[in-house]
Length: 450
Image 1 (cartoon, rainbow, N blue to C red):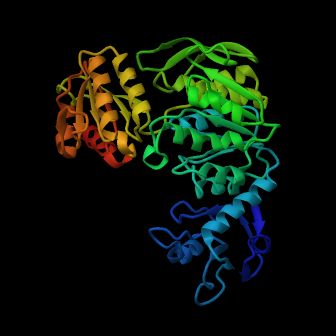
Image 2 (spheres, rainbow, N blue to C red; image 1 turned 90 degrees about the vertical axis):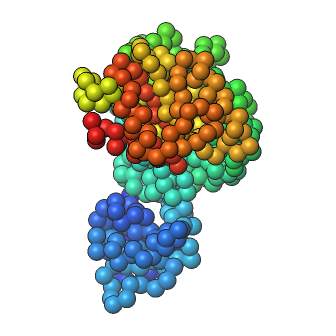
Image 3 (cartoon, one colour; image 1 turned 45 degrees about the vertical axis):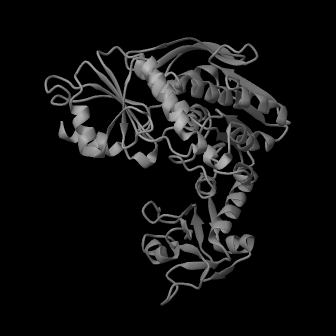
């Protein structure tokens, strides 16, 4: 969205120093800054003010600052504010006020990013649509998404994450969503939210913020999510894979291909038909139902929704099913099947990944599992429970730099790569862990050495 620096200074209660220029969107990172964007230096582990000169050299016509303008002249216009992070949120409010269309907000313990991508694809089949990049779901990423939306956009799709109470309420106050999707309440971030009821309380801040003219899209397979319907003043559309009768949007006859891609019958008040997902894992069916419910409510035709759902490809490190090249595994032909799902991990997503692994035809099934982080007091119990599920499913667990699974353990990328190279071509391996485990490095080195 385009703004003049005089508009920005007026709205932010700041002082403009330099000519009145126009900016188009905003950036907080010189590595991704596009010429014409406003540069917003954030003070965190590093002080973004140190990158203002680089931002100007890269084409930023203006920047926010808590100090004075750049030394040595008016290469760009400065807008002096008291706090750049506070100012960024305020600019998000300004952008939302100028948006001619609506906002879809998405929260939940698992599935936010994939659901966001599915919603974006479905809405884009009928409307100009913008969405959060990657997993931009906090007080920095959300306003940036609004600011960088095109002026003619009809829908903006936003992830909303929570690491504490009040976080989603703050984001919703800025974004003012018309559609709110809650995917799940699970053991993620319980270190900050206490327990599952605390997680539910934090996620419910989204539905509480919806207007009466909006809609809450809720996962009726999750009792804590389904209960949120009583907390919002808007209509509710429920979705279910498990056949909950009260759910308006359902999946029937779910099957998986050899590559773990789901096929199912999508049943809705707007029509029904078959859907073939390109995404891998049975858990993607629930995400697809959420996206379908939102897009159909927003006015996208059923056939367009079904086609769009099948067009979305997996993001890097999220349930990617790969076949190792010749030279890996047992040293001849092709290597094992790899399920690379190490972008993040919590008990629910790990359970789903293990069940997907178990459904594959393989001589041997191995799960290389890193730490599931931010589980607080239930850390030990949840890791042992996951290990017990793997044993029940006939999966061999190897812990990566952790003993929490009570299983065999390897330490360091070299040992983990050696493990993978010892797996045969008829086998299947799941590689999964939280970001802190950095398991993607193991996969990269293994594949590069094949």
